[in-house]
Length: 435
Image (cartoon, rainbow, N blue to C red):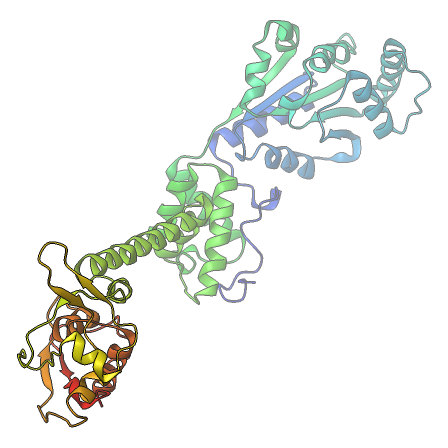
């Protein structure tokens, strides 16, 4: 995908073991030397131990690919979860031998005769058990039976045990002490240092046909090396993803920003960071809504509340407040324009209470003629609501009255949203319908 963009001949950071890109740190050199010496000198058991991804399999395959295979027969066991009988049958199968019995000791004796013949022909038999920490303890105990297949000078089969750090702990168990004593060569592959990690990246880029300085900035290299903690497999994953991301951004060389993004994806923290931002935005919206509710109130709640009959004390006939018509209940009923007018008599004061008449009724009571008063202009203050202003001005507020005020103020689209500082026109409702 990114080879042409970065002028690479081949992908430098394959996850699968590739002996062509083998980088030998001091501990890798020691492990390779242990394998070579143990097999060629027919020492019997060789143990290679290391953490996940440090390059144990790469070292082993490097040896197998570079050594002379004409007199070397290798049986490679990938799945170590085998019984001892299952292991013997696997060996038989790799050597092309028929399994003529299920008796363990007889199978071992028959294998001994085959190995003696191979030894006479100058061939070396190698049994490689990868992921040895997964092998059952009983099978590991019985491996010593294969170790006993020997001449007076040499072991007839060389067994290379490759495992993770847990395998080292298993070897320290009391029941495996005989196996541990038979391991002649042992080596541990350590994680790379920071300097070795940087050299590792540069070495693989050079092997792929490019100069490292044109691929990554120094800061990006240091960031990746620090995060990988000396594990070659982790370095490969981060570098490969950084090149893919840099190619996507058309960025050459890949910068430390690209490295940080890849590391965030690698750790799984990028999605959590996005979630935190969404959560923060949601909390901000909720806080703003609460502020508006507490300071501005809910217009709809107020309108709903004012739909109940308003109890206002009827004023003496002929007395008006500025900008508002007032008539007695008896006059409104006589005019026949207020069906269902609610009346109450105060039990204590005895005063007559009623809901103020609608705008149409006011106009008719005035003889159908307009008073000619100019409309009132009100400046919206903080905390005002349209229903509250109307109730304050006319004594009540219902949908019909709100609609009349909206017709005089076309800038009001939503009665729930009025802006402090704007002006609102309150019409003289004696005009009949407020228009």
